[in-house]
Image (cartoon, rainbow, N blue to C red; front, side, top):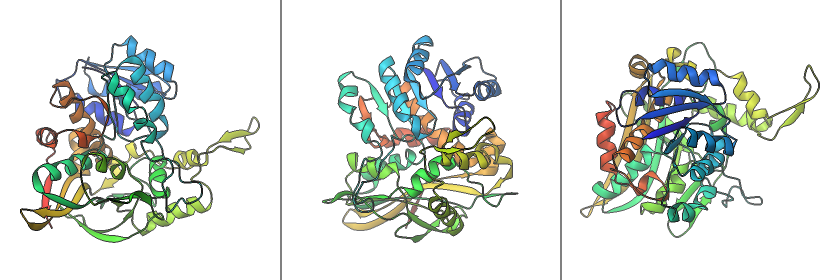
Length: 404
């Protein structure tokens, strides 16, 4: 397997450090708009299978040419969601398998944004599913931790733990803190704003997908391994759009443990219009310039990839499932916890980006060994869960299950 990894930020860099320990691939080309980042990521692992290139992720033709020049048969997208579609189409043009960790962007309903879906996450990609299938090509979408491992948990629950599923609810929480910062998100603020301020999507059998107000339906969820109770709220996320396509459940939700301070900050950004992606004109030393307010917010905050030495605590991603097994009610929480102290000591990557990065590497290995195979635009739920969960454990990062 020859892989083109596009994006050498925190997640992309963690991908290289995890993959370097595995023998399943022949080469990994690390490409980024900033060549210094790509070179640093490739050089750190000190492995001749890795090399660096510069590419603009928004330039479909350039990415296609890069795939062909290095004879890459897989494109792994580690950029933010703005670049999903050009990279998705570049992979198809080059005849390569495509893997991402976040799907194409949504657009709220014009008249009823907090009741009806407009363009949903992944709609642009699923619109091309038939063409991918006809060509015998695979696009594996949403293969990070959330979405990704959380979807694998949903499939595992359906296959092995339940006869009927009433509700699948992804629940994400952490007790991470960052020393020296009053506000320092542990993941891309650009993506976090997108997820948290868009109308959350809920799925119900018989009703389909619908939306609610941001931060709706607050609940306190008790997270394992010492994290404890965290207030979680509805957030737009890919699992709600993926799980019902392959797993039968009466209701699917995603709730994120944000905390009161984080929610307040996001609401303020929205109130001031600083969550917008449309450029505004501002004065510059050489005259007026056009800049996206959200990009300004991101530029003013520390890079999450650089915060590992200051972070303390654990992050938990997991899937809560309620239903029936052998005629009796059952409720479980399938989860994956990463301690920042461990991920920094073992890989030099902070917990949130490492937890995101390990899952696409596991998926690539399953594809390389034909343990997973398919064609079309498929989510993680479309594949058997057990091989993934066993291999994740073999990577030294076991998952857990708690009966509720």
